Amino acid sequence: MSVIAQASGVIPRLPRGVRLKRDEMRGEWLLLAPERVVKVDAIAVAILERCDGTATIESIVDDLAATYSADRTRIDADVRALLNGLAAKRMVDL
Image (cartoon, rainbow, N blue to C red):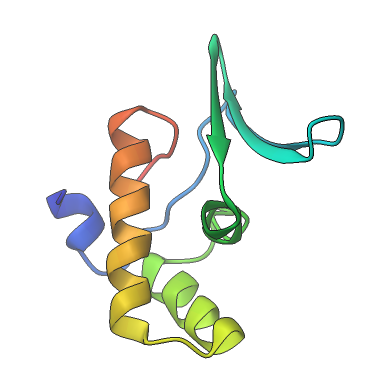
């Protein structure tokens, strides 16, 4: 896992040119970037909607744990794994 996403206080955001969009015709969410499209599931959408450039990874994890009444440790691992994977593809800035 990336050292950056493991650090405290990291504020993830979608880089310029990348956006989360709902494709109403197909009924699915897409992460759009120049010359790239990635289908994302409901869990990824819940995480990416919180990557607004102001929330830290820790606050995103806390919000998701409270919203879904789920184990914070598990959510933390899932959030960091998703963000690291997307950062490697340059679809999220950490």
